[in-house]
Image 1 (cartoon, helix red, strand yellow):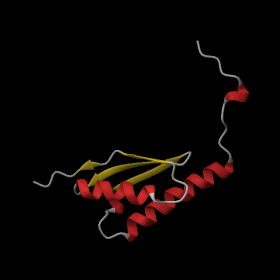
Image 2 (spheres, rainbow, N blue to C red; image 1 turned 90 degrees about the vertical axis):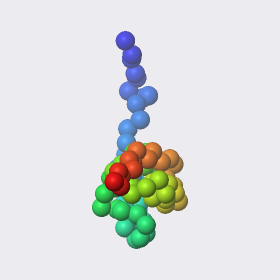
Image 3 (cartoon, one colour; image 1 turned 135 degrees about the vertical axis):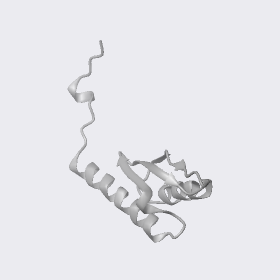
Image 4 (cartoon, rainbow, N blue to C red; image 1 turned 45 degrees about the vertical axis):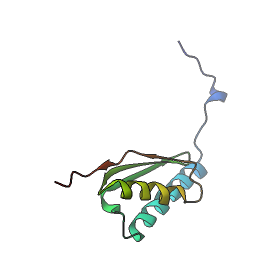
Length: 89
């Protein structure tokens, strides 16, 4: 059985939520602006500065570019890219 003291539990503050929402918005704008990425087929969420990206990339180069653009956003502490590569058959 795991016991956790209330003082050990990190509570997310309103500032943390705003920061995460701001990061998510900045990532989405960066993907929309860049012509080599498909923002419409990309899902973005942020928790404690770590951005999780999902969806379908046209190829490995687009997946790598999405990770780079995301990592370049101020406040991003990590990127988890779970995008899959589209089957172009």
